[in-house]
Image 1 (cartoon, helix red, strand yellow):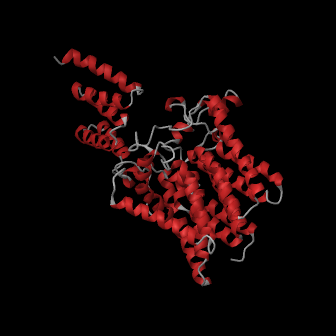
Image 2: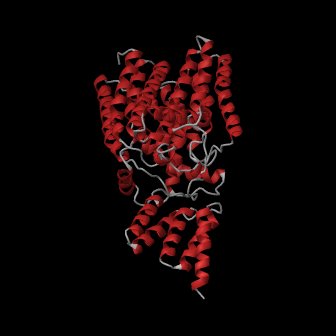
Image 3: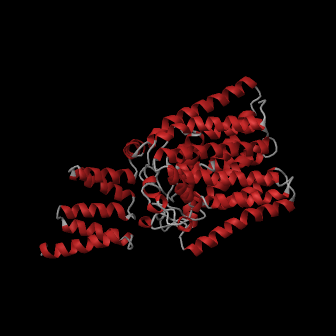
Length: 489
């Protein structure tokens, strides 16, 4: 495709802007309510230091994770406006910047033609909607932007070693936005291997990327904020060892491949009930294993003829590792927004594959069809994050069997006075998430309102057993036991 690098970057950025722009109409939704909306330290910060030391999740949610770059950006937004539409407008700018940086990186690695197609595919990929359409998704985009900027500086450092300072700056920006940037040194090695760079540059670039990341974890420890597990370990993987987690994720990784390559169905939630967490030997585990073997064989066989495929697949493995529940467990099984950075590897590989088509008209037709389909699906998806009620309806429509959906629906049924269906839904939620205290606590409190003390005690004791630090359950259990002692003899 006869374009210059500047044209490729500009076109990709404009398409990203057009696709993301409808999200400006969205309100604060879901996690936005806790992280951003009505947060006093962001709206009225007592000092710059207070903002920099503030945990990503507020104290009411455990005060965990340290992302000072993202928290600072929210505080700066409040200096202009408290309207959610302003925050979403800034998110659109981050989507444009990140797309442009990745398009430029692809141009540096493979030329303007591949850069343009990669940038277009990245701009319209539907799996990005969750990161773009809710405000807290900014963490994904800011981390990805810093990540891409660091790697662009790595490439330029081959000509001017002074760019190593830019590697360090990009690494610092990425890691203070989200912890996924811990993989950056490995990505540096991948990029330098792809360019067959000098070994002396390689170790300097790796050091430049590593030092800010190590410094981040040291400072985070001094600040006293726990970085991981904001919402506890992923439901279904509690108390599961390394090998068992890896085997369970082999099956669940089929969902990654579907979201990367066939993202027609998107969901607001991927939890037990919708997904099956299993460490047994099943047909789907074997399918997942075969797909990973096939991807490895494809990367090896194309490493010289179509190197972009090997680079892209290696990128995906590197960047998805922090959220894969293998090296260490996380708080969720799968979330679309966490695939944002990893998706660059897939679209880069896909761009190489499409441009390998020899017939020019067919090649252009395939690119146009994929871009049009991706843009249409992304734009249609954005309203699912318009407000909390719309998001809740999307949750019920897209993940009706998720323990989270059943939990919320059960509470709604109780609130509406439909106690029979409310009890049934909460019990189904508990069956899918037996180690989670929340559904048991809610069911126990509903039993207390009906003065069904023994069923209430049973559920609240179970809630305390699975989470002894959950103080509301402990308080409710004491009240239920006192009431039972007065009435049940």
